Image 1: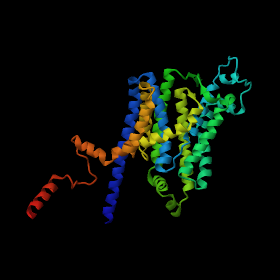
Image 2: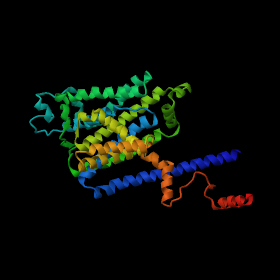
Image 3: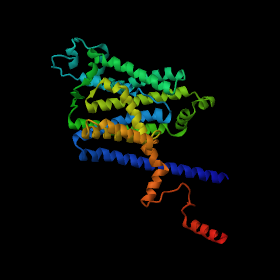
Image 4: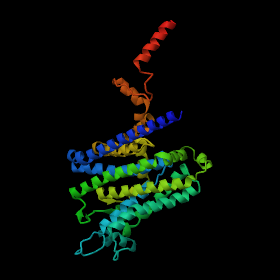
Length: 394
C-alpha cells in the first residue's frame, strides 16, 4: 500500500514537472516571437500599440490576482496605474537642458510658477523615480486595503469604496494645473537617461522591457496562485467565513494580494506612459478601471494567461474598430462584451478548457484525450468486448 502511494506521488510530481516544462517552453517561445518577429512584421505605429497593450496586460495580471483568485472586484485600479505613470513622467519632465531659459517643466511657466514644488525635487533622480513607481502605489494599496479589510468590508461595498477613491484622486489631479498640468496631464516627453523618448530605438527598448517584465510578473503571479497560498486565496474567494473559522486571518492575505496588485498597476502605468509619451487624469477615470475588469472577464477569470490574452485582444479590437468605424465603434464594442458574457461566461480560456472545445475538435476529426489511462471509453478491445457481451445477452 505504501509503495502504491509513493508511486502515485511520483507520478503526480512527474506530471507537474512535465506541465511546468511545457508551460515554460510556451512562454519562452511566445516571448522570443514577440521580441524578434513582431518588430519585423509590424509597423512602428502598430508595434507601439502592441507594447502599450502588453503593458496593460501587467495591470490585468494584478486585477486577475485580486478578482479572479481572491474574489475582490476593484474598480479603482486606475489610481495605482496613474500614480506609476505620473512618477516616471515627473522624472522625464525634469530632464531639462542646462542651457534652457527655465529649469521648470514647460507647463509650470504658463501658470506663473517660479519655483519647483518641493515634492518634485526628488524626481530629478532616476532611481528615486523607479522606487516611487513601485512604492507609492504599494503603500497606498496597503493602507487602503488595511483600512477596508480590517473592517471586513467586501463584495459590492468594497467595489464602491474603490470607486470613491478613484473619484477623489481624479478630481485632485484634474484640478491641479500648476502642479500636474490639470486635465492635460504630463505630455511631450523629451529625454530619459540621455536618450530621446520618441526615437524608434528607445521605444524598441521600452517594448522589449515590457515583454521581459510581463514574463517576470506572470511567473510571480503563477507562484503566488500555486500551492498552499493559491488554494487559500481561492478559499477566501469562495467562502471567507469558513477560512476564518479554520484559524486563518483573511485580512493579512487580502492586504498582501491587494498591495501586490497595486504595485503591478503602478509598473504597468509607468511602462504605458513611456510608450504613449503622456499620462493624464483620464487614467484615473472610473471607466478605465472598469475596462480592466472587462479584460479579465473576456480572457477568463482565475486564469493568468486569460488576463494577458483579454487585455491584448480587447484593446486591439478597440483600436481596429475605432479606426474602421469611428462613429459607431462603441456599439461593436458593447456587442462584443455582451456576446462574451452571454456565450462565454468563463472567458476565452475557460471556453477552451471546457467540453465545448472538445466537441469542436471532434467535429474536425480530432479525438480529444481523456483523463484516464488506458482509456476505457475509446479503447478498441474494450469496445469489442462490450459488443460481444451484448450479443451474448441477446
